[in-house]
Length: 227
Ligand code: MN
Image 1 (cartoon, rainbow, N blue to C red):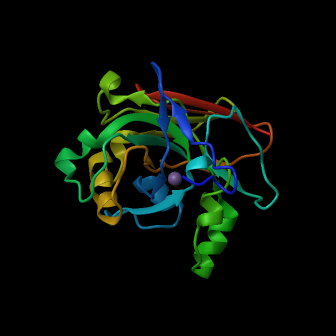
Image 2 (cartoon, helix red, strand yellow):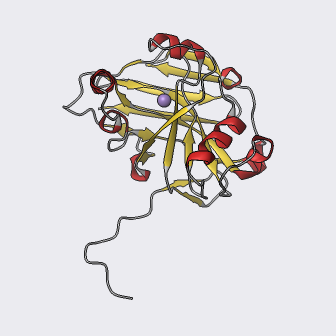
């Protein structure tokens, strides 16, 4: 084998509660998967097929501090349940989809809302509004072997101790098995893929010093500070 001509990127990974590391392959995100959030974004909350966007694997971070950048004046939080894929497959049947799940976590789909708005208006891609460096904070992954496959559970986000998002993962327009079934029609899923499953209503802007705490009841907690 010939040598790499530049240093290869270190593998992105998320620690697993109870031991080990989950190697991150790709990060998929579901858009508008809670009716109230679809409404607050100016959309139609009817059960249209889910749509997806991506973030780079190394956007995933366990850093306790996230630095605000200069290109956006409106960085927003989106608290979400995250699904970690353990077994790959294409055209996965919803009835068998949970067999492909290794575990779950809690994540934040950080969004440059101003850039996203400009991109929507101009019919341009969302990549620089969604897939930037450290745009995917996550908590350690909890194996399904330990907690099962949660279908309901409060999803709450506190900003500086005040509740801003107060949903339930049972309110998803497309629950986890359907998300996996749809997504695996577009791409063959593989071990290491993460899926951020969408956010409930109540998204909002972050400023320096903000403390963000996100919890999915019975799954995990995530906390970080904006600097
Ligand atoms: Mn989101």
